[in-house]
Amino acid sequence: MIAPIAAPNSGRLFIVGLGPGHARLRTHEADEALAKAQDIFGYYPYLDRIDARPGQIKHPSDNREELDRAREALLKVVEGRSVAIVSGGDAGVFAMAAAVFEAIESGAPSWRELEIEVIPGVSAMHAAAARLGAPLGNDFCAISLSTNLKPWTLIEKRLQHAVEGDFVIALYNPASMARPDQIYQAFDILNRLLPADRLVCLAKNIGRDNEECIISKLSEVEIKQINMSTLVLIGSSGTRSIPRAKGSWIYTTRGAK
Amino acid sequence: MIAPIAAPNSGRLFIVGLGPGHARLRTHEADEALAKAQDIFGYYPYLDRIDARPGQIKHPSDNREELDRAREALLKVVEGRSVAIVSGGDAGVFAMAAAVFEAIESGAPSWRELEIEVIPGVSAMHAAAARLGAPLGNDFCAISLSTNLKPWTLIEKRLQHAVEGDFVIALYNPASMARPDQIYQAFDILNRLLPADRLVCLAKNIGRDNEECIISKLSEVEIKQINMSTLVLIGSSGTRSIPRAKGSWIYTTRGAK
Image (cartoon, rainbow over the protein chains, first blue to last red):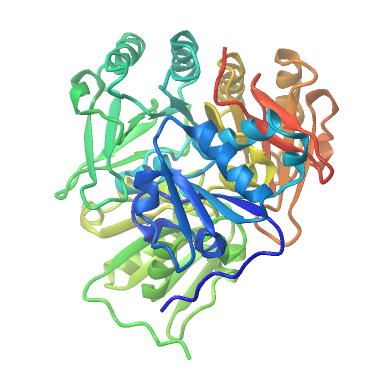
């Protein structure tokens, strides 16, 4: 039997990145933090990945309630509880850490002095890149396509600069039921600015049993394949494919002209 | 005593990201891969972080010999050995994975069919961000300032687009003995394009006992503090500081105008 967790001397918050999918992709530090938590907050599918210890209480919530979740977790810390708030991948990349600090900045002044530790994790783009080879082997950027909190015009501007700077581009949150058209608009921009044979990888369900990578040329991407569990990688001019019997390796050269 | 490793059925290569510094920041998957390796290749300070098992052979090499190291490791795999080649942080970010695939593409055709697995890790920028709060909480990019394999003009162009796109910017390999002036040139560009009060974080020796984060305004950055063990983070327009008794939290708002 796993030992029940001990009560802390004072409240504290661990903001934990679980890595993508399987627990094998978690760090030891993340496991240690989870082992200390009396309360664990998070989007419910992430909480399902964690084996609760005796005495631990899970507080699942829905995807779009990040700020409320952050405040609830902070209130538990104020009560003196040891609390973890979890995200898939890295907690600092389009995930809970920024929401918690937003809640702290707009919350009670005393919240600033709470004990808080952010535990990094493997972000989705790094896990996807590892499955493909080394597509992030030269300068790259990460852009979230979600318009929940920022305007589409800003996303367009960033896509344009990412292309003009010849960065490898990782697109997070590429599509959702609420905004099915934006991923098509994003590919319109990419198709206008980039050569038709630019390499694109759709990395689906990375770190899970049903993971899948689809590699194609930009002009041939099947956009309808992209959903919220897809990480989209757009190659730079230095991104290359190495054909072999078992699918291709994709990598970006370390050098560039 | 730790059990000696078993001989593999056929050669294979693990390209392993060790995470930054302490073994606590490693994933379980990385530990599993290291446990299977008969030969471990890498830059010697990274090899020092690994406790070798009975029967394992370490092959340390110098920093700038990445392609030779990749080829030597591949030759061991051809011999039927189980081999790990390691990097600090994530192996796919300015590290060994791209060098290995470069060696494969330019090497014997049979190398393409070797068993290769890339094991992702926590990259330096994510670990640094976690110590600071959540500075990578919105769109960001990563640029290596090393001119070993790409021209300075390309780095300048990428810096410019990163700034104009209002990305948070992570600078890897910001300075070396061989090119002490370039980090000053990079800050000349940043100072010309960004407001003087833009937040900048120098994250030094992250994940090690002597880790340190220095936060300042762009116009007040002490550039001489920056060395090869420093990860430089340049905030976007949404990067904010939350003052508190024990130093400040730095985060980037999820929303943007």
